[in-house]
Length: 194
Image (cartoon, rainbow, N blue to C red; front, side, top):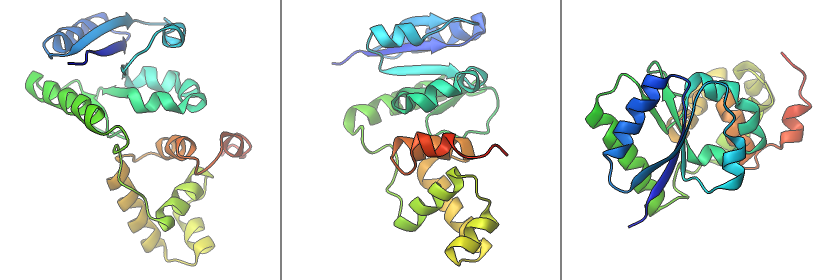
């Protein structure tokens, strides 16, 4: 049986120890390293193989440039949320009970083990175009005008995209678009700030 290696990027000592205790109860899981406040986990990632990164929501935001420059890291990232407003399909919530968290992590591992390519459902060509336009900073109304659609139709497409990908935020869609070659990092970097 394969042993899955996790690193934790959590600035709260108590929360980190709680996640370690939880992971230690899951067969086939090993915590490789814990990173606390202001510690850089990048050198560790560059020198050792890691299967999963559990990162606190505010730490993920702090390291967003790293995830934009190395989008392959998103495939192995599990977001640890304070509140239940997930933009990621692969997220866990601090308020969930132990059994629920264990089942969710086990599901993520089993899903990765069985089919690493099936993290999200295939987008239609129209949905792909809309993801690209959203990543370029266009509003629903601007997308509707550009594609000769109603704003309601664009909103329906956005709901379908959210459902398929489990991503609700514009920044999350942008990272998805970069990872899947829908838009280049250079195109995103050259966009005017809003």
